[in-house]
Image (cartoon, rainbow, N blue to C red; front, side, top):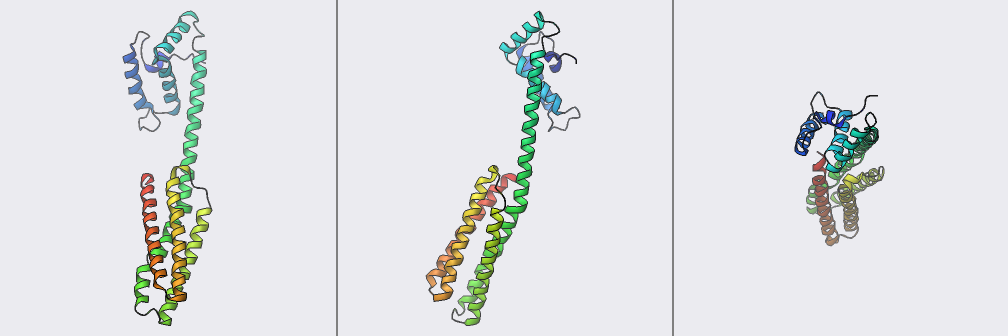
Length: 232
């Protein structure tokens, strides 16, 4: 196996200044980074480049490296080769962890967030029309039956959303979004209960409280959506 030469990695002579080393590293980092579109980009090359700069970019490390090269020819880079291997392994582990996190986030969005957001719409969107229809005559049995049917449907949609929320742990990156969803569902549950009380006793304060709780839930849903903007 060929010996690693950090100066060769950076394309510089051993007489290069620290400024030249820094400039060469920056130029090569742009070209070799795996997320760039440069044809020479690769994980292995950027790892080797980072290892070279860790040594040569630090004057103290560079002096030690140069001493090894001067007094132990042929063996100078062995300790640095191990450092390169360690850095490559660490980099690959970080990339794998990032890919796993992205995959977990995608699953959560598809199986938890998106279905719950749709269910919330089915609960809150019809409320204004339902209340307006009932207000024509709250003591009309048919109108009240329609409103009760709406609340029963809300209850079913909510229970489905709550089960969906518990079906998968939320990724740490969306903890704030998940918290807003959780409190949104809680407000909806309380709001449905308040409006159900109204259907038993016709006390309008229960209806008004239920509407206010739905309004709060809509605000929490908007905050959750705003939090999701970072992942759009």
